Image (cartoon, rainbow, N blue to C red; front, side, top):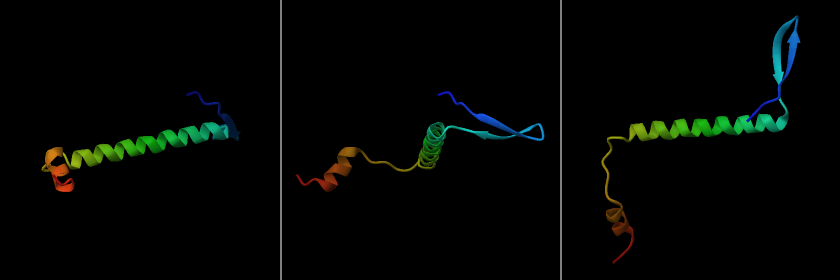
Length: 65
């Protein structure tokens, strides 16, 4: 992805960067996806040593034989 910012200076110092709206939306989506991945990784790390059961055992509880 490439961005095309317009830089606005105030008293000769770069003060603002203005992006086309579509580029802003793309960056916003990328950041949201990144946050979701971080949350998933954190949740997986917290549950790393949690007790587990085989899928067949779980299914047996819900599907009568």
